[in-house]
Image 1 (cartoon, rainbow, N blue to C red):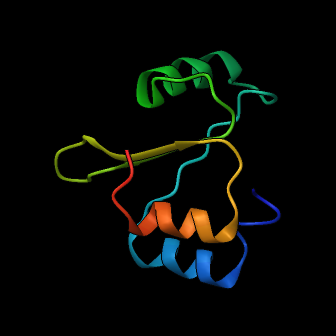
Image 2: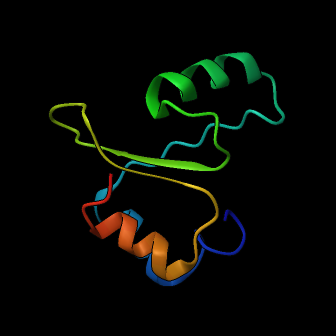
Image 3: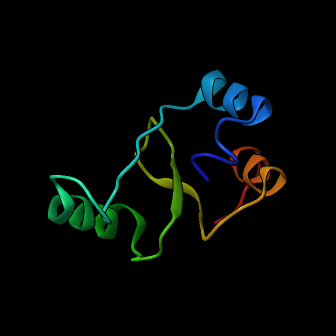
Length: 83
């Protein structure tokens, strides 16, 4: 996803337009335990990858999807109502 989907111009533009992106890595890095705890709290899942879109006002999750996504499916997630 990080190499094949997120850098695509349509995806990158949509992310820049109205999203604040945060990435948690729990397969490597110095804060694995903290990241796993945060993923379980925010995503309610151990799936890898998992994408969760939150409402910035209410802090409530709007959409969530786990697994690898195509460019088209990721754009649908960013636009759609999926939960």
